[in-house]
Image (tube, rainbow, N blue to C red; front, side, top):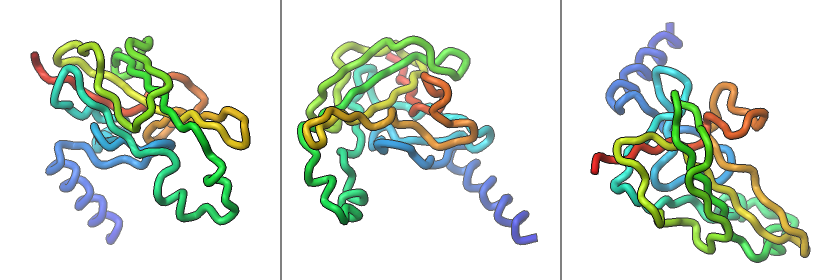
Length: 167
């Protein structure tokens, strides 16, 4: 009985929030637009951005929570952190080819240099690139944790979703 009440409450919350709920994230957490999961179906929700050239933002690497748990000092040896960004159009709610990519971004944000199409859906993802003890390393591409959201398929249908406004 309690499970049914919780499921009903979750359905109401989903309906009130536009059928999207905050999602658990693997990798760097996006700050804008946020990572949302469609409440009705376990798939990425496309969050509308404010411009055809939005400024995407994500948490810096390593994040504050990870730094707190650094008991052996590994994180203090990380140097030269930069970010890689990819944007892919959504075709039938799956990512297609890369239409925008940047590497070596110094900040945990990026303003699009070229406009995206109006009223279009895109997937986006980011990863950190850094040196540790002189060796170059990268984090996995960030994505939403969802059903069937493993790294087995790339590009992932669980990259973050964004939707552009009308002109």
